[in-house]
Image: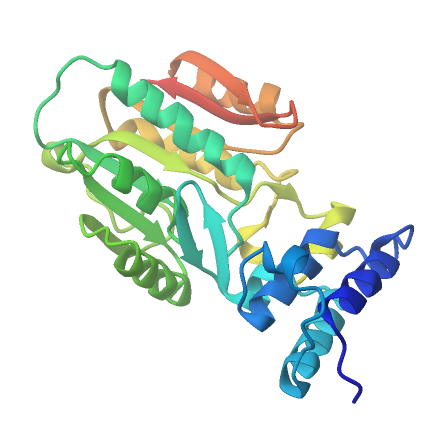
Length: 289
């Protein structure tokens, strides 16, 4: 195998991504993969273009490109994904955290910071935690405010990843529970929550875009009833688990804002609002009980 230089690989990346829609590989995936393989900072691609990959690095790079062309996301190759101000381990058992989900973090923190002083036993629930990115990011930001955080997921494998992410991000005050949504939770007064957040499955099972997400766990992506089944269940049950004036925040699809707001209203929520993501699409709906 002929060893290639960084300059030659950058030229190859340009050929792979320039006008070739069939590959469906963003150019930054390829450059980030190259940096991961050679274990160098981004500036290296500019300052050391003459660097020649070793045979093992060349093999690893080529194998990764092939996997990406076959539908494997970059994050599953590197095993890492940045989210908020932290880094998260991800694998085939968890969704890859998206930047748009950071809207959830921003809105929940804004709501919490706007509240008057509350009792010391403040509690937050993350339903369908996956990699733990929402629960861990919020706990990291609230670490000085003595919040008790509970993170729930049906998948034992996902919870294992979430626990690992809490450990590597040095976030300790999270209780992880294996449960189908609220099933293993108590409705007693001392176990109610001030905040419930969730990024549940919300893609319509018939949506053609699911084919582009085949590497990620389908159970965490799609839901019946045009993608609204899990959202509806979470909203309907939330009043039983929220304290008075508690907040519910749910991420949903770009075309589901109207339907989700109606579900909030139908179940007694007030001050319901939908916040758009960085692309200008409806993404997170919030309301308090």
